[in-house]
Image 1 (cartoon, rainbow, N blue to C red):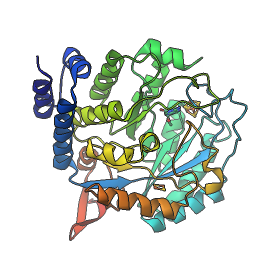
Image 2: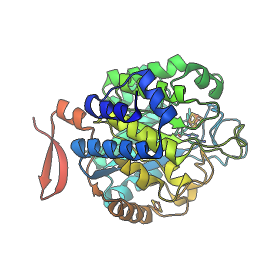
Image 3: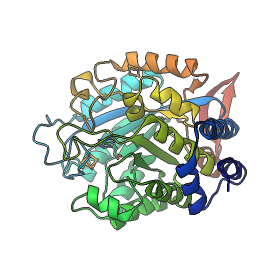
Length: 369
Ligand code: 5AD
Ligand code: SF4
Ligand code: FES
């Protein structure tokens, strides 16, 4: 078995076995890595071309009842300075975002019981009233089937819920009191309800072996999410994992490239965490198959407080500055920003959305009835 042959197989068949993927991770040389990234890039060019979609991230609460041992806003971190945005604050972010060309907003927060279904529905409706053509992505952790359904019916389009790790023992060691099975159940429910769903995992967690990463790859292949968020684990100073080593740029870009080969249609963010461990991390992520960036739209007054890991970038920059900065970076890396909702291509086809373009600019994904 040769690594290059496995990469060729991945490129042609978008599949590989556990043994092949493990062999690849265990034996990947720098030359193989160049080839892997090349093939991932070719694959993304076939599905999405050189476009990159932007999502405006609104971190609306850092209050969380969970206690994930890697996370800086975990319940037991008494150092965290907690906040919640009001409906008005959120709408202000959304308006600024729309003017800057963000046609999707990601409402992300800790698992905060203040944001009941009623409150979330009010927020979702208020955004959709103002911007009916813009997409809303939620990222609020685990909730009941009914809750997910109500928010979907109120107008939410997508939901991000990383599976974090597909190895049960590792999952349980990182998430005291949480259930591996329940998280997976949530992912299945979200899909059944009709959301475009994002799974995803961290790279370089303490005690994470290559075989665990293969579990992640195969889980994602099987579950077939519309999006997949992958970032390096980065230690946070006020958590039990503060002394641990974090994930690397190399390992994370390898995972991005492999996910692109396994799921050619997937929306694959080049994450802020990747940009935080390397000055050109996000650019490298885009070159390895990534096609989404999620710049921050949260008010600057709270950015530093939404601290999941140390060294997060963009905490002092206004939304407009990030917008300009990110487009410059994307262009410099050889890609271009597309001002649209940026749906998963396979999902758009299935759901009757068609691209309407003017010149080489896509105006909107329009539903033809
Ligand atoms: N390092 C990297 N990513 C983290 N996340 C939480 N804490 C950290 C950390 N210390 C990720 C989790 C979560 C997402 C919102 O942020 O994967 O799902
Ligand atoms: Fe809460 Fe999410 Fe952090 Fe876990 S990772 S403590 S659920 S904000
Ligand atoms: Fe925020 Fe560059 S993307 S300052």
